[in-house]
Image (cartoon, rainbow, N blue to C red; front, top):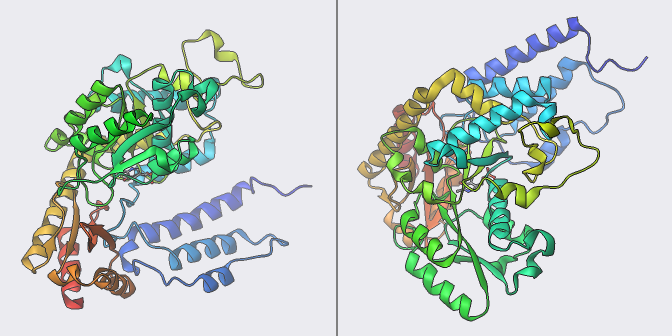
Length: 469
Ligand SMILES: *Cc1c(COP(=O)(O)O)cnc(C)c1O
């Protein structure tokens, strides 16, 4: 008799009940923990079970895992985690991941998971139109993250500009293809260039102005020089809310440039795209509809669990041209229907129902819920900036996003000051902030990534910082 992988109904009830109690204790009392763990690789490796000879009782196994996470984790769901766009997960997102794991839909082929695929198609259209496109022209695909979405963007750009790319590869381009972005853009573009065969030399990460924005004149000057040297400019990637300091590239002017030179315009709105959910702030994305493709991470400002991101495009045929591969072993039931099999439109093959997190969150919280939370996070961010300035801190960035890069005058002379201070703060267990280099100065960087962070948390943290300098 093999082991029962289902476990019995009775033991499942006990295990669920135990797990529910433990997870609830974490979720309801996240703030009671130190934000960051001691970083002790040897102790952690020592903590792990290395033998799987004997199966453990369920409760013991779960306790081991939960204690391990509790002890050895930066608690990004903590209200004093001021980090890197990693949210506390909204409750509907947690429910969605539980449902997805239980039903385990296979979304490679439409006919295996019609409900799941249609939910994701609807969301692609919903966000595409929110970002300003016509309903009929929206296409897209859920991705594991912004990095995969940016890689998809590079692939579609190559296929659009070089129609023989799918068959001949980069070598069919006659000259090295080059993409343009700013030095402040996300480094996943560099990875995408490596993976796509462009190489790092195929990326022009251009210097920015004092507002940390890409300068269209710089792009054009570099582009003309590249053309003279026989290179093949094909893509311009703008960032709407940079990862470091929250800068917005001038999308309208970049779009004019892209049009003039026949470049694919990509807008990386991984974090900033959520501003479209706030009527008060969506003007910051007013030119987003000019982009050929968009990256949007719902696992950032939509506060959903990891693995929830989208690549969107207003070229409905380009994903097909980029990724269509057929295989005899794939289901054919849908061949007579007006549908698309996701595996023919994306880098992934087997796919998880990550879109359910967005769908269930929108069903349970509504656009209005998101509007309120996004506007609140911006207000708390403004409170952080005000409190810092009241205490004599200098702000090095200027963004409507809740991201503050700050320091003291002596940071300009002392390379290590910001890092030392952030380490001290992290080791106190009271808060987590990072270090970001702006204009040659290492600054402290704090971002409101958690919808549960209040003005009181922010005041406490600034007081703590003041006590450390
Ligand atoms: C976070 C981020 C990415 C990468 O997204 P992942 O979800 O981490 O893969 C890309 N671009 C920008 C602007 C980002 O902030």
